[in-house]
Length: 247
Image 1 (cartoon, rainbow, N blue to C red):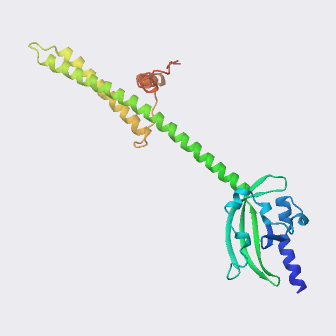
Image 2: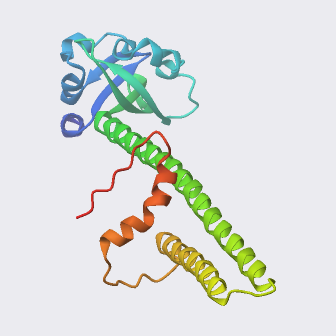
């Protein structure tokens, strides 16, 4: 059986993860990766309780798992647990330990395959940070959209007020004994102008919401900015000063 023992020893040392073999919670065998991971030498670890490698907080969440050799009716997997390990220098690191009960000529032992999860924890933390940033960005965007919606509602209300007022002017002038047609035409033009402004604003909103096909066209940029000035002033609020510096 010497070749089998040599093979087992070689596999133990070749494993990329730390391996601890425990008898009633005491370490009886470790591989090189375990020494590297925890910072303790093999001589320091063998014979000691495995609890020395786990923080007190993790021990509280890990009742009797390391001492349940005789409690298992048959050898096999005892599950995987995530704990915080402690190195010789006192530093801590997140690890994942897969435990299994194994029968040997000396009795049943517990084999722990321990994987360093530091990089995974960093990746998870980075994902959580990015999710938080994205959520914060969405919240800010919703707040900005709320302000914009308020400004747009105010602008629409102004346009409706213009339409209603000039429509009344048209009716009043048309109902006069001697209606002035030129005045009626001028007032009607104001109604049309306000309606066209509302239509243009609607198209811009649809384009912003990607509900309308955008048709590129040549624009006088200064005119566009001036046309938005009133709505922008309403949107940004009284605490912000808006200055237009047209080219």
